[in-house]
Length: 218
Image 1 (tube, rainbow, N blue to C red):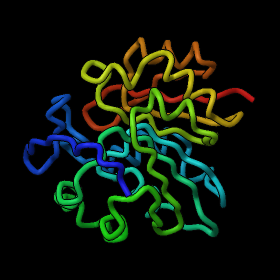
Image 2 (cartoon, helix red, strand yellow):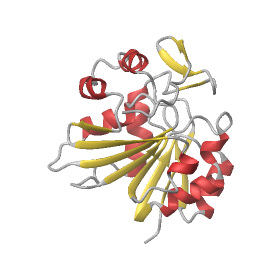
Image 3 (cartoon, rainbow, N blue to C red):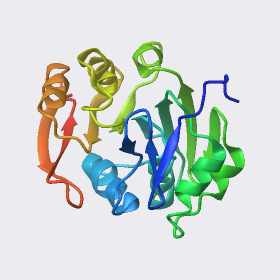
């Protein structure tokens, strides 16, 4: 269970949760599921690369939307591993309200177990690492095959995109591993490139013109 970190303060705009601390929505105001599929799944070459034991890591669990979409789109056999670093775990009632915007996505298993550090979803084992990723990632002993970099906007939450943290992401990436993120901010791309990734700017989701993805050379 959680260690007692406060839940984030949330405002609601047309049914979409917005973090008051950053004045930034948790997912696309247009179509959060489509954004997850385009940015984080397709951006990492998923689900084609998935196999039993494949390890995904994420900065920013938020509503759990990315994990739920990935679990739904993975058809097995075997189980995936999913580790998410989250500083302010959302209250269960807020999570349920947010995910109600996606009636085609079954959030029952997540909501029944939330809040917890370990959650079993269909075909996937989820671990929540609670706390500031600038501290918790450095002490993590895992390495991911793919990263979902889903912190709030770099302009509003610069700590989540610091050069030192991007270097830790690279250090905790398996050779040939990948990352994808909705942001195309130049300083983020530069930090990831300095960390060792081959970085590419590509077409974004919906109204967002560009996003970023990359691979750690073998």
